[in-house]
Image 1 (cartoon, rainbow, N blue to C red):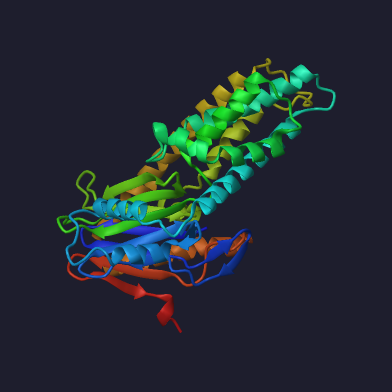
Image 2: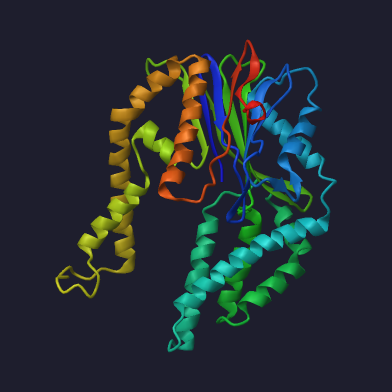
Length: 400
């Protein structure tokens, strides 16, 4: 995991990133390069988080190769750099063969099938009737299908693309499907749900190995800095799969000066400092209210009228929304309003010090709570301005 922070105002950009890189459930090294500056005259950097590679090729290598093609004429806007990179990558992936692409997709499908198989086996009781087993199985498939229906389709994954891509990996899908689901209840409706879910999983592309790239800085015609983010899932059926996730320029709210904040990756402690909020408390408060209203069945004091699961879920959602709204309203009044004023007024050198300190807080929180150190290592800090372009403030290569 990664912790990165982009701060914007009228003076320019400050950005900071940790250097820890994890593989599986172990940290392997603390020298990852997650901030990649573009050469002048381009006033821009790319922040990289998430998956290190795309089908085995490091993103840092690809970004540097792409940057070499830009020439000496800056693009008009930050978002155009993002689009230029995606177009370049979509046209330059000869290094990855179809076998590797298929293997990577099946690896992701195998993981989600395993999770569904576990859910089904946890739900089914030995003394359930065959009809009950099938009903529980279908309900779980419906939950997963509904979840993926709510996710956006990725670019390059519409129309005939889905059928063509599915056909190319149909045999491999059938093999892994038969492996996991040969011992669960199967009927026509369940088979249809499995097929629908698998196609949605292919189309939506919300895999665990996604990478996020944040293009941040100035376009040639932009007086204010901005960022344009994208999440990339991989390449399938000769198309790059991606989703735009955030676009913003430094903006003014009310009579404030221009500012912008973009935290990336693990940001719980950063949110606590900036907003006074721990978002887990919304879930904790909601759970406490629901357990008070609906005590466990074995509680002898439980005199609450019975409610259906659907009614409880609806009520829980209403409580969650109300608590979340009140927390954010309190944060806006007590933290965020002052934060906007501070961020908008700081020169870039001070902005860089703030960004570094906040990444250090995120790393420290893992240390004192005993969490796995997925955020850590040297903290790289840089600034970008229209006058001076990209400048390192602090980089691991020059630290003693």
